[in-house]
Image 1 (cartoon, one colour):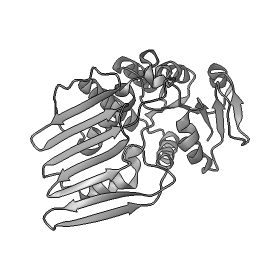
Image 2: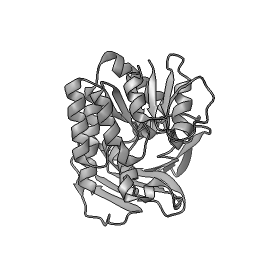
Image 3: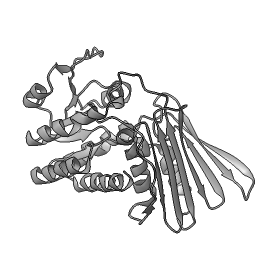
Length: 300
């Protein structure tokens, strides 16, 4: 099964390419408007439209600037391609619904490529939580000020902290709390380079902060049943070094450390995608995309 990549993004170069290269039964094609640095025997196009029109690939991965996601995803579906899209899936709920409806109509696969939650550290922490007890989840994903020419600094290109990072907060809610009803508090999200999320129920409190203009911080803290779990590199786990989860047990007055070997979370993602496409099981991802879009709409 071959895959066409639209865009030569940093994410593609750092993680996606290395994950796909491990799979012997996958050949990569790339459409890019900038120089392609890898020297492998890869079919290369300098036009997105030409690539989609000419490729025999059944899967297209869209790794472009945010404002381009909907346009090219829609065109790919029209051309009967299964589509994977970098976050954010689209820049508004209306665009998301259009893509889902078209994919359902044409019976094609559609997915937002969010993979942080596939890391083994999340699966382990989730297995240790007592969901019958109160849970206080706090996350902070802060990065330094972006270079001036970065598209995320431009609203017209779908930039801004909310567009780029709100999906992390939405996936945390879906991952840990599923369909549970939460009350979303009013927060000031008018700032272009930061936003926060506050949601709660009787036993749940979620407090998340995301920033483009701060010292680097990338962690999730979960208080549950006398324990505190701290997940470092939570939203962007590195593929070249190990990670650890720290657990503080106040009742036992102990601290534990769980270490996890280096992992490229795109490996698990692509294995799942290929399996579901072969079996023509698409509803899971349709439903997931729609649930995330609804949460983002509530927290906007």
